[in-house]
Image (cartoon, rainbow, N blue to C red):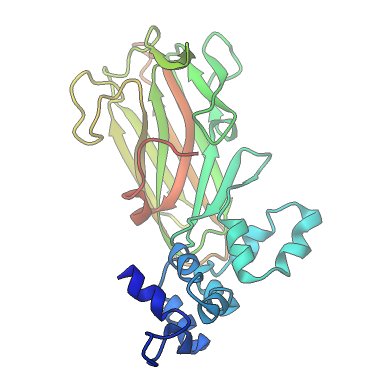
Length: 299
């Protein structure tokens, strides 16, 4: 099939018949409206008409979220005007890379297959009870996160982590999740090893996750973070690997005004201590993209 398609690209079928090169560029552009950006880029190599359609502003504007100009405003101010003057294809390429904001503690990007808005929020941007006391918490450098450091809890009685983000999310249904790791990990002789010396207390009482939005939406769930049994929901043991714990979903109907989202996780039963936990980030991504996302983190 591939060989047959290559024969049709520019010079017809070899017997004087029509070729893909005879298709008007405007018709190709109409077809591209129904394809994903990677598919468009692959087909652009076929011939001149496909290349032209694959560079059309009309095609790429349809792939961009309606409020993409807000994302461009997050780019360095010295380059802001220049970015607005770029082609829509170039803008999509720029915005599909993660861009930090809020002092580098949050990142936002477009999913390169769907053009939908995704966000990650570092533990550095959250309010963590006792974070200033090195007896309880430490900031640990890592290569297993989008961000340079994660928060590691040695031991505490009152466990509470909370955060807030205000952003012009594009209309969509979003899932908010905490990315958590039981045990402290490091590299030894080039191999990843985990230490569970401080890991305790998470199988006694569940952790409560909550989210709320500025328009009154709320969601909550409770979960035991530690369990020596096989965990059916996550398909693996809970120790020694990163797990995304879903807090809930919220719906954005309009990007203006901005949506404020508050989120938290807490276990404030002071009858026992808990520790040995890494907190990386909170992710906010369109709900149907989450089911396709692999649990192993890809930077």
